[in-house]
Amino acid sequence: MPDPELSPVQSSLPVAASHFGTYVLADAAHARDIKAATDGPPPVVPSLPVPPPVDVPAAEVRTPSAELRRILRGPSGLGTASLYVTRREEPLPTPLPTLTPTAPPTEGNPIPGLYHHPVPEPDPVRVEEVSRRIKAWALDEVDLYPEDWEDQFDGFSVGRYMVACHPDAPTVDHLMLATRLMVAENAVDDCYCEDHGGSPVGLGQRLLLAHTALDPLHTTEEYQPQWAESLHSDAPRRAYRSAMEYFLQEASPSQADRFRHDMARLHMGYLAEAAWAQEDHVPEVWEYLAMRQFNNFRPCPTITDTVGGYELPADLHAQPAMQRVIALAGNATTIVNDLYSYTKELASPGRHLNLPVVIAEREDLSDREAYLKAVEVHNDLMRRFEAEAAALAAACPVPSVQRFLRGVAAWVDGNHYWHQTNTYRYSLPDFW
Ligand SMILES: CC(C)=CCC/C(C)=C(\C)COP(=O)(O)OP(=O)(O)O
Ligand SMILES: [Mg+2]
Image (cartoon, rainbow, N blue to C red; front, side, top):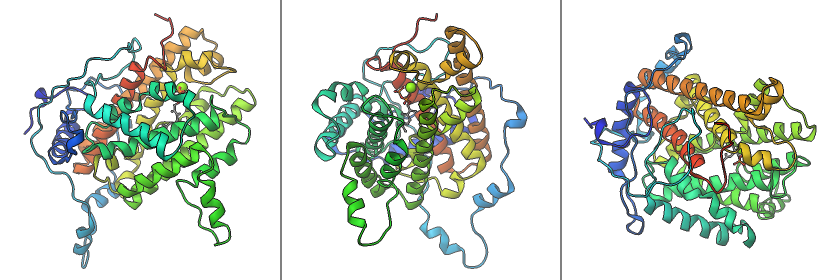
């Protein structure tokens, strides 16, 4: 059994979850096949310390339903044995290597009082290679940005982001799947919704047509070519189309469909945000949180299995307990963005909604009080995420479930790391 004391701390799912997760991540590390050119120190594999106390009411920690137990057993009865042949191989336990991060620490301070887990510095060899490849893709394959946006592209540090969020990716090719999608998603947000020519006006049609780069149009011979041509007509669509094409080479049909569903959720969230912006309307806090559950990082952690080179089966992904864990994780990661991007958004033209701004307005609090309350909302979401993930991990000892939960937790931690250290993009308010 691997010794959790020996490996770097990254997250804190409680012990039941951690042991299963440690086994399967160790297997991934063992099985990885990194090309010689990108070989460096092995990827950092999260281990798990003893968890902090969790204050979620016991009634909210769910137990597996009869339906979940049925799915875990799998199909049974005459003639079903052959069904198992098509299952993807599940990760098996092997010893966990001891890893030593070699990159120098980066700058940036965490928000005081924000509940988070520090991560080891992402492998600098991988960061460099992903950064090199993503720039080549952006420039040579999808013609993503004009020359004068180069500083912003570099300042986004997407290579560091994705290496931090996917410590169990077996190869740089796998990391590139996530990196291209992350860049494409941000291109759509910047160019359609926000500060690079975006506007709420006409957003619905732009998003819908871009969505067909992920979820293709099936139409008649007459109209098909015009649609195919449209996918090359602007940078967001070129980026979505190409990133999805790569993703489909690795993802199973149900992983691809999961991703499309999450992207449809995201686009719906953009539309609600745009509708409020158009009317300069400040929603109730709960309404804002509902919008932000859709305008959310969710499509990023939910590809953790594809990026890790394994599959969480669709019927386990669809379980209500798993859906709740995913939603809580997505919400915590997205409120992290609201907190770290607060000063950037205050400085942008017009009123940009984020959780502190909405709390201040709707609950008649000072900017500082509202910000500190938003930190508490984040912390509550994080603790709920961890409690529910731990309960699910304990209830569902299936390697792919354990590994997926660990992958989501690693994404949450890596996302915090990136926001904290991206001082090109974000700075903290002076509230302490
Ligand atoms: C990568 C991805 C799926 C992003 C979707 C939604 C999104 C852009 C965020 C959750 C980030 O929020 P925001 O638009 O506020 O980003 P910045 O604060 O401008 O970094
Ligand atoms: Mg923001």
